[in-house]
Amino acid sequence: MLLSAENLAVSYGNIKALHGINFEVDEGEIVCIIGANGAGKSTTLWAISRLVDAEEGTSMTFAGKNLLDFPPEKVVSELGISHAPEGRRLFDNLTVKENLHLATFARKDGPEIKRDLDRVFSIFPRLEERISQKAGTLSGGEQQMLAVGRALMSARRMMLLDEPSMGLAPLLMKDVFDALRDINKEGTTILLVEQNARMALNFSQRGYVLESGSIVLEGNSSDLLVDPEVKKAYLGG
Amino acid sequence: MQLQSFFQQIVNALQLGSFYALIALGYSMVYGVLMLFNFAHGDVFMVGSYIGFFVSAGLLALAKTGILPLADNVMLGLVLVLTLFITMLLTSFVGMLIERIGYRPLRNAPRASAAITGLMIGIILETGNLAILGPTRLSFPALIESVSYDIGGVLVTNKKMVIVFVSIFLTLALHQFVRRTKWGMAMRAMAFDFVVVPLMGISINKIALLTFALGSALAAAAGILFGVAYPVLDPYMGILFGWKAFVAAILGGRGSILGASLAGFMLGFIEIFVAAIFPSTMRDLIAFSIILIILTFRPHGFFGEPYSAQLRL
Ligand SMILES: Nc1ncnc2c1ncn2[C@@H]1O[C@H](COP(=O)(O)OP(=O)(O)O)[C@@H](O)[C@H]1O
Ligand SMILES: [Mg+2]
Image (tube, each protein chain N blue to C red):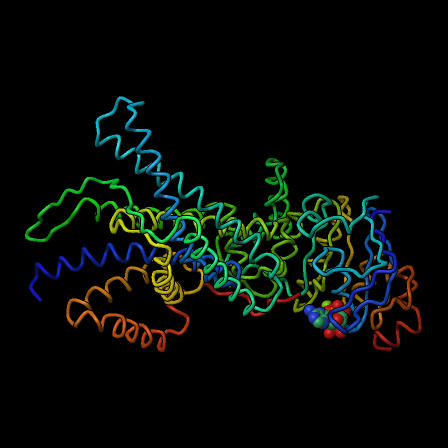
């Protein structure tokens, strides 16, 4: 098992966002967490990235190490977990090239960085055309490509993706998810968070259903896709 | 105003602006990168000047022993360069200490708390200096032997030339650092959206330290140049300069290096020319009224860097 969370609880002041949830992700898997707006999906990813503090009693391990021992920047640089946050959060004032390079800030493996950059450009040729453009001037689709590309530049083992489908036209969405599947085939584990449940379940092998900060259902994605509860609540009947 | 006197004032304004510009850079960088007004920064300029005093006095004493067989003026030049270098390094540690002890514990506190922390650190630096060194004013060693050149009736001294040169040189060096290095890139990313910077594998604490180190080093350079121009140091010398440089930083635009420098020089020009035309008691009144009017029309200053509207998780 690569990532495991036990009793993960998070509060923002008085608001309890996660009520002690349990989940795990195996090496090489694609796992999704689906749930309505406000269910706590993004909070789960922020907690893995250590940008929000988990409460007392939480236990999280990654590759046998205690995740809670790592500050956020080392979750990326030492554990190899990258996180493409909700809303892309690109650095609009930096160029495409700078955004990609920034994600390699802590990496010291020069030749491999070059190889990874070539890979990003082969997946998203549009980014190479826009290489000197400021990220803020890209179209929505191009920004999403850059967000995924940036996460690729720092991912050594696992990618956390927060609603990568948001704001994408269907055709582009297919491109992005095809690319992600290739990336997964090359060995990167993926934890995906989506409101678009149908798409997430079609893309992943296993899924968790999050409701108001608790996991209410889990299982193989193919089973969840035909589950009456899931169909009613998340797949439009 | 006669043409000669006009050019004379330009020379004076360039010198005054050099100090404002160098100090404003530190204000602007910290504001840009960390969303913080470091109100102790004027006092870092003062501390830099004092450190420069001791470093240069030590180096001059060393030079007198004749350890290097150099001509006097070459030796003096070497002392100036070494003083700048060593003092900037030492003062950058002062800046990092301020960040570590004063501001880091308040990283997530309300901004007002961080601002009064700055004011308190400033008072501690002033009164600490007074407690250690006593009330006698120190006089800064002469690191440049004054030479005046008469250029068509306009008096230009070698001191003024060095001051303006160093100020512009350091500004451009900083600009290149921030544009071209990966550390500078991280600073610009912080300025836009510091929340997600750790997701790039970058430690916010390290970038914060770097930002304070750079700003403090430049303030130290200003402190030494100030000592060269006006060789009397006192513990409160940083207050007025600090406030004026702060105004320049805001006028230049949040986080903009060239903006802060430009605004620093502009402030120097406004002050000098107001004083040349009006009674000197009205200098700051008129100068700052002008700036108030400029800010009314450009509330974000000249070249403010953009930042994300979404500064939370
Ligand atoms: N920075 C924050 N401060 C306070 N409350 C927050 C913050 N971020 C999220 N929340 C609250 O936590 C809950 C879970 O939010 P989130 O994890 O963003 O859900 P999701 O990603 O599933 O839409 C919501 O009730 C939300 O309002
Ligand atoms: Mg969300």
